[in-house]
Amino acid sequence: MTANRLSRFLSAAVGGLALLLAAALPASAGAATPAGCRLVSVPVTVAAHQVALRGTLCRPSGAAVDTIQLLVSGVTFDQTYWFTPGDPGGRPYAVHMTGAGYAVLALDRPGSGLSDRPPARDVTLDTEVEAIHQVLGRLRDGSLDGHAYRRVIGVGHSFGAGALVTEAARHGDLDAVVATGFVHSVGPRLDELNQAIVPAADDPVLRLTRPPAGYLTTKVGTRAELFLDAAGSSPVMRSAIELTKTTMTDGEQATLADAGDPAVSGAVRVPVFLAVGEHDDLFCNGPYLQCTDAAAVKTWESWFYAPETGPETYVLSGAGHALNLHRNAPELYAAITRWLGGLSG
Image (cartoon, helix red, strand yellow):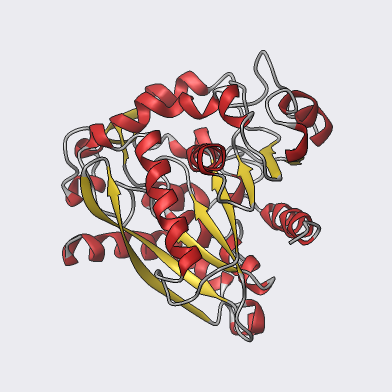
């Protein structure tokens, strides 16, 4: 990571989110605002490459906590997703959860955001799962920030959710999984998303960071239509979602569907909370699953999970694929908080 790249990243993020973030962290937020957030760098092995994954670690004020949420976003998104409020005046996910007493680590996946960029072919679902497993070990033993967490909750969106479900199936070292925008289905606009994936080197913003061969992103001007519900999202989000996009790899693209293997979810043995947007036409509302309500999602998804996982299901009304970026996202956050509070531990 060069200083220039960091500067460009921050400039784009701040420029695109200034209105939202200024409203999200007002002085009146008081104790709900994270008392301490800092950038962290975690050394991991991705394939045969020694790289650094970077993220933002936030802890609530007051007594030390023993539970942390590991936040992993989907492809072409990064840690910014967890710090973006759906509406001016609202609180983003990370702020809500620290206010609820959880520590959070919003992690940039290999090759995305502020994390290092290994060769694109080596950044796949499998190698990301193993990288996440290494991060979890450091959270458990205290070597990441000097505090050993007793419980780790994986919270993911889309591809990030699939990676956490896969990690839980293979290693069993998560205490629970919250998977948003991840179901075993396809929607009528999924092909449109596939066609919108282009080389990042051709992107007018991302090409400034000199993405290596095989690094991809979304075509300019496509993100709002793919990831947002127009009626359910703030007008400023159409610009913010473009300015804060990041890279994915052709290795990820080739393995996107692997987490959807029923053998993966069937091997999970911890509680699972599944949330989707009512109007997520990438993975809902096609030939298999209509995301009309939580009962419909539970009926479908129960085929793919062991009974002990639940899974608990939730549909955010009037939302598209990127649930956190909609005005009513706090309703989802409250539902996750209630569910987590009901888990034994």
